[in-house]
Image (cartoon, rainbow, N blue to C red; front, side, top):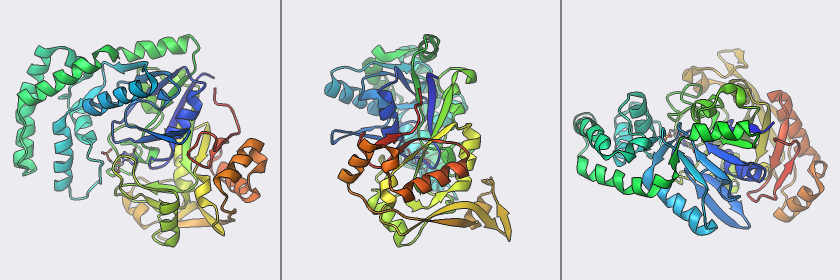
Length: 431
Ligand code: IMP
């Protein structure tokens, strides 16, 4: 089973960076297939923290890294990350899809300007993600391959810049304006830097799959932020669900052998939008502090709540999940009771399926089951447990995990209780 997709099964920030780094040890190729530098994948190794926005989390194990066509690339961030990996690890084995789209400086300006005129704010990361994907779909986008052809780039920018200036001026009432020469210069400067890494990612990925290599697809954000399946319009602009791995990297759906969803032991959300199990009380505050729940990209505090089993079953269905990974179990330690939402109640009716209507989601009352908590354990205690294996975990934690498996209807592959690679117990192999 060498071809595995790992996706977020909540609102993002589930700990995918740590998980993908963990599995990268046995992977040959790691592919990032959607999103841009709205993502912040944190990996901690030997006390050193690495934060990647665009480069796949297999970077630390020095695996073949591929950025697929479904990603949108901020050239400055990308170049900085390449340099960072090269300076820390001497080299980087990276391929950037020539079909990926480019986030230009005006996309970031437009992101802020569009938010300011929205009737309901999305609370974006202001990294230009929505405007870049809008241009892609509207067929005004600049692709990585365009950066290699100065005349074509010039022509495309000639058509795009006046349009963007009109939107900024007349729609967004913004004083910002753009000049083509500045943008052309910006593109050409970074084109030179990333040129050695540009190529046809689909060919490379399909070749690796044919050769039976272990291939890992790394999702960004989470299922509930998927532009089609999520809590629209409070979503990101890409397909964060498993199907995105295929369209975003140029492989057919039959090649993915296994899809694994990552969840936190509770749930968090950054930005606006409904979140039925949100806790606006001392427990919510405790989870935020203890779990260090602040956005990796923007530093914004994340909203915290109990695990939402309705949303979890939805994630299992729309991704076709085969298994789960549960992270941050340590954060729940020390609570007497832990709740888990199994259904919602709305207008006197029980709701078991995650609804499309935001009105229902906003007004739904979670129906909770209460389980016993487990003690607050130190890093050292967890380390001893990790050495001994799954049955050394507190009984109450194992009960909680068992209940998650029952609600989701799929098995757990890995549990994690800290940022370090060692704070992990594997229950099943993914490759
Ligand atoms: P955008 O992706 O910057 O357009 O933001 C759209 C929504 O997705 C906002 O609510 C963001 O807070 C959220 N979002 C985007 N990227 C991430 C992420 O990596 N983790 C968590 N939330 C995210």
